Length: 124
Image 1 (cartoon, rainbow, N blue to C red):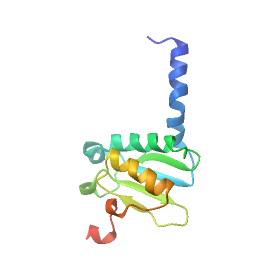
Image 2: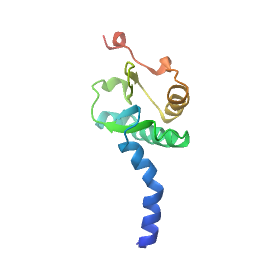
Image 3: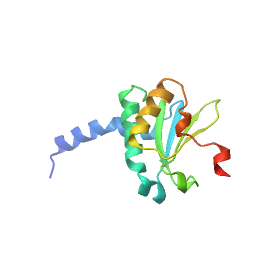
Image 4: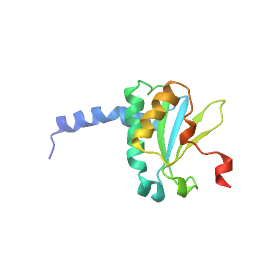
């Protein structure tokens, strides 16, 4: 069993990640974590977003959270990016590597990676 000091150290290290998932930033990144998303690999995608947002110093601007079923199971893992005053961006068939690219290009650089997105035409 861990000592109280060791447990406190673990809690302090993980605090930034918990704040990222519960924060209230200008940009919200929502990862679909229903059964289909988890089975398709959403957990590493969520972890990559949390880690990369933290590494990029965006924790005051970007909130990373999870949700249940988004409703497009065939495109899992699905990530939605919400920005005030802009249309929602839906990234599909995500991987941890793609998540890193999205953080750099979209969240840092403001450029949507359209190769990873889905449009209403794709849903017909």
